[in-house]
Amino acid sequence: MTGIDIPTVERLIAANPQDGGAWSALGVLLRRAGRSEAAAACQFRALEHAPTQAGIWSNLGNVLTELGRHDRAVAAHARASALAPGEPTMLFNQAIGCRKSADFAGALRALDRLLRMAPDHVTGEWERALTLLQTGDYARGLPAYEVRRRIPSYRNRPVPGTPWDGRPLAGRTLFLSTEQGFGDALLAARFVPLLRRLADGPGSGGSGGGRIVMECHAEQRRLLSELPVDGTIPAGAPFPAYDAHASLMSLPWLLGATTASLPPPVPIHVPDASREKALRLVGPPDGRRKVGIVWSGRVTFADNARRATTLDRFLRFAGVPGVRLFSLQKGPPEAQLAELGTSALVTPLGPHFDDFADTAAVLERLDLIVMTDSSVAHLAGSLGRPVWNLVQYVPYWIYGTEADGEHTPWYPSMRLFRQGRDEDWDPVFARVERELARFAATGKAS
Image (cartoon, rainbow, N blue to C red):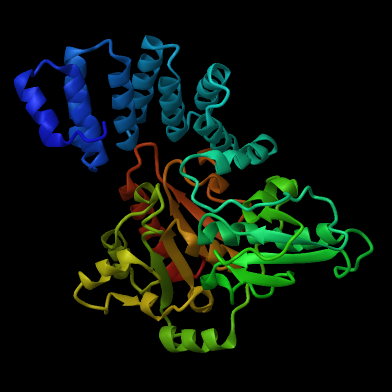
């Protein structure tokens, strides 16, 4: 639909109001513009005039999934696949609709059909990996997750040379590359100590097997300075000399991770200077529960709109007796603080953070962190701080499914508050408010 805009399609519809294809095209354009309700209405109108067009049913399923109307979305995708049984796009969209509705068995069935039909469908392989990981099937999901490097949306630079095969280095140098976001780096860094032992091999005493040079985000350099590596380079810097390479996010696969055998979170280094700054920012104990809040992750992350919310939802917590709120938010969503017109309700700390070590020092001084999912959740979990993570209906795969309850084996100090099937944040925040009042009165976060 390149080069076609909304006014052009509206003129087509004005000339022929019974053109189902034009109505569907308008719906697709409106969805891209973030106007999902209007987009759904256009797809329904399109079906009035072209009820047997598989593409329209699939477009309807896509927008209904976005709106959280999962039962109708899954039914629309099933109709599309029935009308065009040999069309891979219909099966792919059906699989996404099933996964986002938490019908993981249905998603895998659709993906199995798709990949039999189109074995080189890379995004289909990617969806299959995400579905397996979501259900805790790490034995199949982690090796399948390696397909991420072949999907069109993969943004990390390729690393040339020989991939590490898991054997002792025997005097060689391993380059450990970072990828994806800050949270992913913290999540996977827990495997570096295990990597150190395995790469060195038995009998080396941790010093004779080889060298590990790790790529590290500048914002996390101080935080991760105690990892057992022989050197670091800034993310994106020229590659060092090395004999083999591995990615941080490939370590769970290479080291055989299961939900029952996860290493503890990464050891965090918090410099004294950051702790002194945190004391100035947060202050000494004053009888109130000091609660940090974050309402959005990185805005460039593709799924951020589904996992994030807005500051105004968190303001109800400012009315809980005995609670003082501190904003840990960074990036463009910080601007929402200015709309309050006062810093008395929420104390803004984000402007004072130079890196993640500063954030970590503040987390040490807070009684609780309440937030939607972002890298700060990984940091709080790594520090063992009480963190209430408010997650979307089908969240990041490490948080599992609704059947896994309030906890994740990746972060023992984290408590999950999950959206329901309707993807409505209101019941989540109402429940958190009740729990926060209980916490303020008792000091018990779980």
